[in-house]
Each structure stands twice: as structure tokens, then as C-alpha cells.
Amino acid sequence: MKVLNYYNPGGGDKTDYRDEREFIITWVLVFAFLGLIYGIALAFVAMLAAVAGEGSGFLLDLVASPFGILQDGLVEVIGAIVFWPICGALLGAVRKKTAAIPFVTIMGMHYGLAIWIFSHRNHLDDWAYQHIPECKRTIEQGIVFYGAGQAVIWIIFGVMLWTNCKKRRRA
Image (tube, rainbow, N blue to C red; front, top):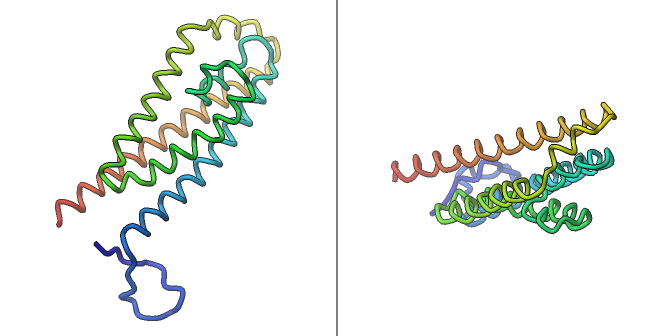
């Protein structure tokens, strides 16, 4: 199946087509790069929040889940920087129907292990002892940033599935 190439750098014929595989690879690379930026930003904010003391490392555990299960800060930072580009690449591949299952599986693993980590560690009780308002603000902003990113991820997932289904109905 061919997909219309919307950019035309050579200024040639407007019927320039490229293979659908190249189109999907482009999306995979774009979303993997965006995932890398998201992972670096999350790791940075979580590291800033983690300096507050006891109980403030839960943000790093959250953004780095499933690596948060190891309870090692360095592994969690590297894990967040590696995990989110993988999620982004899978999200970019959702234009192929078969890629939706691995994406939902890895995100389910992320959420499931995050719930397991928080059910076995008492993070939030320790957070009440923080006396530095700037650190609390950083933790709160990190949670909002993480939540907003998750909302964007699932909106993109829904739009890609919807357009894929819409395209298949026309065919």
C-alpha cells in the first residue's frame, strides 16, 4: 500500500509516493525521539524532587516504573531514559494494528508495577515530613507533568487507532 508523501523537497511531481513501511518507520523514529525527551525531562524533574529527603523519591519510582522496583536511583534514572523512547516507538507503530497490543502491554506493565511499588512502600507518609516548600512544589509539578504526558500519550493512541480504523473502513 502506498501513502502520499506530503512534503516535496525536489519541487517535482505532486504524485510523489513512498512506501507505507517508510511512513511508519518515520513515525516510530519521531515518537521514539519525543519519548527520549519526555524520559529525560521526567528523570530530571524526579531527580530534583528526590533531593528533598525521605519519601521524595517516589516520583522517581513512578516515572521509572518498572525499573522502580529495583529501588536504585541510578538504575531508575537510566531506566526512565530508556523506557520512554521504547514506549514512544511502540506508540509510533500503532498505525499498524498489530503494534497496539505490545504498546498496551508495556503501558499496563508500567502502571501495574507502579501500583505494586506503592502498595509495598509507604512513600506518602514520609512525604508529610518535608519542610521545604520548594521541594514539595517540585514534586507536585513533577506529578502534574507526568500526568499530562500520560494524557497526551493516550490521546495520541486513541487518535491513531481511530484514524487507522477509519482508513480501513474506507478501503
